[in-house]
Image (tube, rainbow, N blue to C red; front, side, top):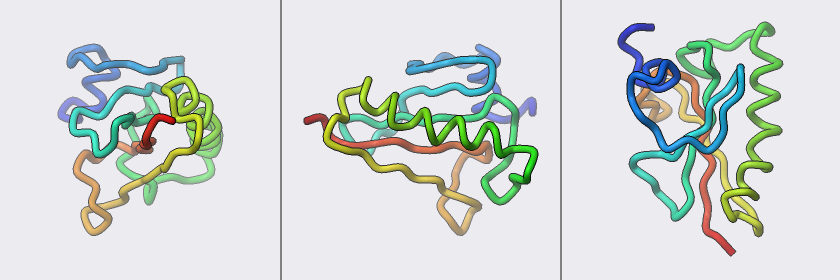
Length: 107
């Protein structure tokens, strides 16, 4: 989508502090962190929100959720972390491109 902030990050039009990238997903630090470590994992394919996912998204959703603990450890979240998915305006979603927040404190 041409007006989607996260699609522009995926396309390299807007810089991001990347944590991880492959053909399917991109992880980058949140520009408004709520914890000392706070990054997001997004599918490169535009999907508005978790409410817009169907069976065709199972593989990328699984990849995101299994990648979260690996990246959390790499970012120093050895003792645990939180994940969050804001879905829709009522769920606090601000950028309408599916993203999974991973955040916590080192140590």
